[in-house]
Length: 266
Image (tube, rainbow, N blue to C red; front, side, top):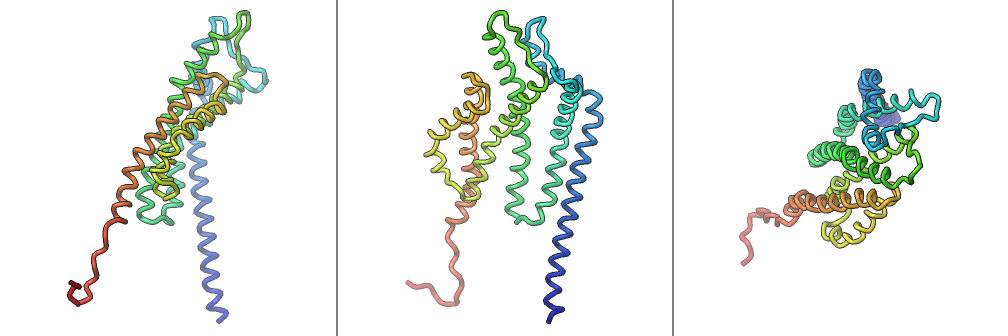
């Protein structure tokens, strides 16, 4: 009896350790992918910083420059940019490693839903970062340069600029995930589409609150985050209707009566 009871325990331990080994392998592969992308980008770190700083440099006065108050900042900041870009380039492969580890434990219908959501989330992340770089930064920096008091040299430290840019990239990248979040909540049964429509006024107010928290303290920045957030919320509700419809139709379809061999009641 003791041998029989210990067999399932040993099998569970072997399964647990095998999962740990697989997880370690997946993480190592993801880390190596980021490093392989980082090595060639490191040689162009100065050029990458110039590209990242272009929205600000374009609105600075002719004699305006960015400054570095840290001794090693001129080296570390471009390296950080190269590393962040390497992670972004390797992100599809990193997500694939995560998917390969999680997928065996998912049901078939969960796999059919998860994979499109992951791809859509990656696409929306890039769109959100592109919106911040090509739309948000030029308008905000131009507004700041116009309101700067006369006689004030408007400059910024490269470390602070990098921190601000990364924060805005993350903020807009997460903001553009709203449709995916709405679809997941509806599909999981956490909230109904009718309820999402009812709380629309609160979402609008919350969007401006979020914009006021994560963007600079000016009305233009707040609107440029709040308006896309509201529009993406409406897009999420629209798309969630198509995602939830098959499940609803399946549940509402009446079951066929079982053949019991007896005639139906009149």
